Length: 218
Image 1 (cartoon, rainbow, N blue to C red):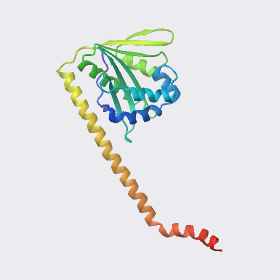
Image 2 (cartoon, rainbow, N blue to C red):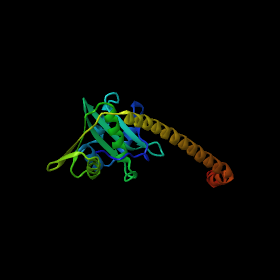
Image 3 (cartoon, rainbow, N blue to C red):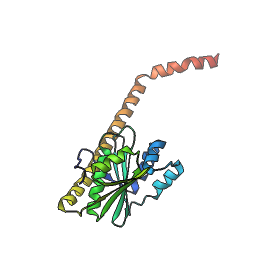
Image 4 (tube, rainbow, N blue to C red):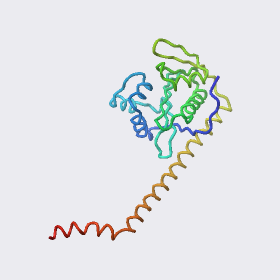
C-alpha cells in the first residue's frame, strides 16, 4: 500500500546549491521540532554539522519551496544499500498543507526507481506527523516504550513510475523558476514604490532636518 498521488505540491530534488537554504530551514525549527525530527535534543552546532555532512551524491534530499524561495519542507532519504531511512521536517506556518505527504510520495517514487527494497522510518512515539505518514503509507509499525520503527517493502520501478519521476522533476524545476520570477518582480515593484515615495516627499525630508540645522547655527 502507498499514499495516493499528490500533485498539488511541487517537490524538487535538492543539490549542493541548496545547502544554505537547508541551513535556514533547520534554523527556522524550534527546539521541540528539532527534538521530534532527530529524536533527541540537538544543539545548533550539531545541527549545522548535520547539514554540512549531507552527501547529495549518496543520499536523496527533497524540498518544497515557498513563495519567498525558502524551504517550507525537507525530506532526507538516507541510503544504505537497498535500504533507505526517511526523515522529514516542515516549518511552522506551512503545516497541514500536504507538504509532508508530498515529500513522502516523492521519496517513495525515488526508492522504487533506484532499486531501494525497503523504506523505513524511525521516530519518537509522540511524533504525530510522522506516525500519520507511516500509517497512511501502510507501513508495518513496531512500537516500544518511547520509539517507533516502521518498514515498507518497496516494489521495483516500472514505466509508469519512471515517467512520474521524470515529470515530477520537471514540475519542481518549473515551480522554482516561476517563484523566482515572481519574487524578483515583487522585489523590483517594492523597490520602485519606495523610490517613488522618497522622490515624492523631498521637501518634507529637507524641512524635517532644517530645525536641527537652525538650532546648531544658533
